[in-house]
Length: 635
Ligand SMILES: [Zn+2]
Image 1 (cartoon, rainbow, N blue to C red):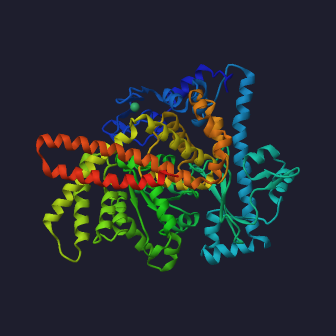
Image 2 (image 1 turned 60 degrees about the vertical axis):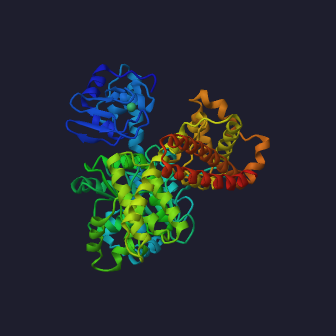
Image 3 (image 1 turned 90 degrees about the vertical axis):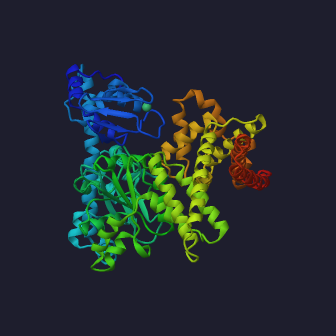
């Protein structure tokens, strides 16, 4: 790409045709404000939007950090790409004939374009091949499963082009390479075959599975989802990531749903292929499914382009795993929801059913589902309900825990009006549920309201201090070590990733050292918040990535390359995780204690005894917490 010089005509046409709003929408959720659009700036961290896009002038500008320019500049900065790369990509995207300054370069471009076209072709041919196999003797099992377990008609099966991958090692390989004469290199790039781990040659990636084609927004097959039929694990297997397919950017059934999402100004996101299929068949057709991964920021940005009101409804399974997935999805898009950039709602089907089961359950289910859509609570109300339901509020210890969880939630809301509303709402709910049996008490409501108000103010402080904290030098070393250990274990013990992520989320801890924070961000970018990657892919990709950041490279070397004396930690990581978390938590509490002491001396001057008492109590609480943590830090 570096040596290609585009003809000035092509560049001029690119500039003419490109739509800035469309380009930026892939990275930023934009809301219409009068003649302009606004959103959260992708170039600096912010909680309230100061990034604006002017569609008439085709210019963007950020009042927070001063970033500004046109579409090409935007893409260059956000993707760290050169002018050539960006204009070339745009020309391809808008199907502008690409003229270059040299003949050889022209051929090179043709080759690159036809490569992608050939990948699409191979995938389409394969979808047909699988479809054909479903109707053969071999495919009987799969067909039975679809008709009897999933209650799909033959017409439904055709509509979604469902198929069957034969139970053999190289049927597809043979078909594509030896009969259809596609180059083996190209077929490998589609992810449909892979090199044998031992010996020569290739084997099929999918064997004895029910095959579901995954298409892009324009309806081209880009990958497959596959369900096992004999109970073998994993139950669902997706194509590997390829030139055409990335699961954190792809949503199943988007090609069928996009027009309906626009029409209904709302999208429903489900967890499984068959939930999406069942809903589409039931004529609820603004539905897409995530592909066995969390909902990512990219997904949300993609979807919010289709709905003006940015209304996104999550309908994940109602079991424990589904609940966790819902919470994780909210967490992933938290900046956007807390800043009010999208309207996220949560739809839970009663009795723990998933959408597919529910629609099969009785003839009236379709209507009931429509009702559930209408009644789906906003994510914040849903989370508050979740918290209140998981505690027995008549019990004072439980009440305190619920109170603290609500405080954490409220503190994340950046819009003051929204925060005020929810503050009194939570106070009301807390006091009603606490006194369910003894009757409502308005004096107590007032007390709860005031302490919520106070607690949310203080926690804001604690959060801010968490990000920019300064320590005594002994703490300093320990914190650096604790952060180091967490990252080391995160990278080298894949099965502890979930664990570490949960701790950090639950206790609201952040990395304070610049190089650690940097690495943590990189990890997030790569995994899209999936913490269960059971392989070394993450470590390898990160290391490759680091070549671009020499300023951090040496500081992070000991994390990437395991040192001899750190090996015992990796083989027995649990104690180190606990102790590292305890260390970070203790430092954050210590800081809060200092804040309380300072508050008391201020209040002392004002003579405000009630508030002083509150902070005295807080200091006593922190002492207890610190003692408990000290035990954990002994390891
Ligand atoms: Zn900015």
